[in-house]
Amino acid sequence: MSAAKKIIISLTCPNCGGQVEAEEGENLVLCKYCDSAFSLTTDEGIGKIMYRLDVTREKAESRFAGWLKDGPKAKDLAEKAEISEAYPIYLPFWRLVGRGKACVCGVEVKKGDKDEPDRRIPHESLVNREYIYSDIACDPGDLGITAIRVPDHAAAVQFNDDAIVTFGVTESRDDAYAAGAEEIKRQALADGKRSMDEICFSKAFFFEKAFSLVYYPFWIIRYTYEDRAYFAVLDGITAEIISGRAPGNAGSQSTAAAVGGTLAGVVLAAFIFFGFALGALEAIALLFAFGVIIAAGIIIFSYNRFRYGDEILEGALKGKGLKRGKKQRSIETNYENTYDMFN
Amino acid sequence: MSILLQPLKCSACGAPLKAKERDRMLLCSHCGTLSLVTAGKTAPVNFAIAAPAIESRDALVYIPFWIVNAEVSVTHEKISGGGISRMVSGQKQMRGVRDFYICAADAVPEEYARVWNMELTLKQPEIKTVPDFAGSERVVMTMEQETAGENAEFIFLRYEAEIPGTLQELDYEFRVNSTKVLYLPAYKKSTSYQLGV
Ligand SMILES: [Zn+2]
Ligand SMILES: [Zn+2]
Image (cartoon, rainbow over all chains, first blue to last red):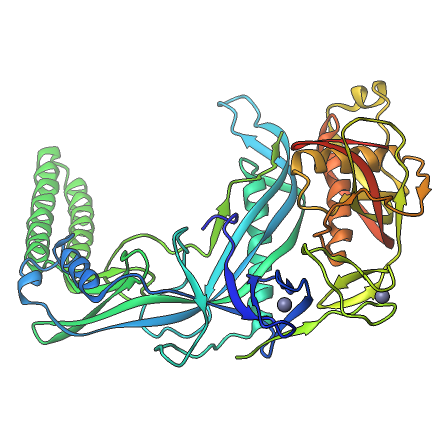
């Protein structure tokens, strides 16, 4: 989401009853009808923002159906998968927007050829950018969601937790703020470091623009395949697949195991053949030993691929399996109004 | 969760404050006092208005700056190259006590603000003050007081990095003595600004 777009909350003016609009993270609020100035406080000390669920059940299910066919998943997954439940859920995220400024000084070391000594090139940099940090504020269990990227067209609505399914906030506001500010400073320093191999001096600052608790919509689709339970999570605004579990293409994996086994045998045979060709007994023994080690490696690799690669994991999911999909980054950079210097 | 809107009151007379723009400096229509809005409350504020030193036919506006009086002491610095040009060009060192100028208005494009901040901090202009805005526009102040000190410290680091030579090592102390508001006159023509001091 670009920083230019502000999130708006609607309130009622206590003085004249007119509709007052407050911007995300702003504690000074004015009534445009009677000009009264107010400070905005919440009993939890933080603005809550909820985004409207834009994706319909039909759209979510059709996107999900497309995802079942995508990638090295079980070939008959689309036919045999049965949706057991599909429901929207709102997950809370801490969202911190602010400017990261950093000064980084250091040295780039270029390895010299053979006799030449290493070349040491001094660098200095200034970074001045706006960053957006987000971090999940609840324990999402096994859903594999860690951060959000709010699209520009997302519509903010006033928070109302009566009508929605959500998880309780588990991380404290102060801890979340501190973590976000640290992360933005860390990113500004990383952006300043660039080609430096050694850092001699660095200092970073964080200037807050907005801090809020954001409730973001998702579709959770739980399904079964051959009596085993799987799931997928879709972004409730863009319909993108955020995370999910799916059975892998077992056929191609057993092929991988078979090919691996055959390959191991071929390698071992080749080593023995070369050993005999060379003639010396020590050489035969040595090459045989080498061959066994390499063959064993190939078999273990193939076995692991077969044993653990029978699941496709999308999103920030832990566990064994073939990991796919986009990484969820906790930091976004807003490249408008960037004032950097690199020397 | 409940959201509460608490009326902001004049720091001098207690009258409810009214405003058309979201300014951190709110003017009381009852007694004429300017109050600073900080952390959801109003507080009395130390401020001054600088007299225009040049004339222009463009519209005169007053831009709020945070003036951070701070002392910089550098105990160790290593610069690679640029040493000679630094002396030849007579580059001033940003050391000791000085006023750091931090433009506090979002309405002023950053291209202007960052240049002014550096120039004014280096030049330390003589400021003659006037008692009031005399009907000229007072530009909305958006920057909160808490961030002024660190913004000033970054101006110091910016200076050290921008002057000739590549900064390599720096040990310093940046101590803020005081912070106040200064309105500087500027001439505005559509979206371009010319500073009037
Ligand atoms: Zn009103
Ligand atoms: Zn008053």
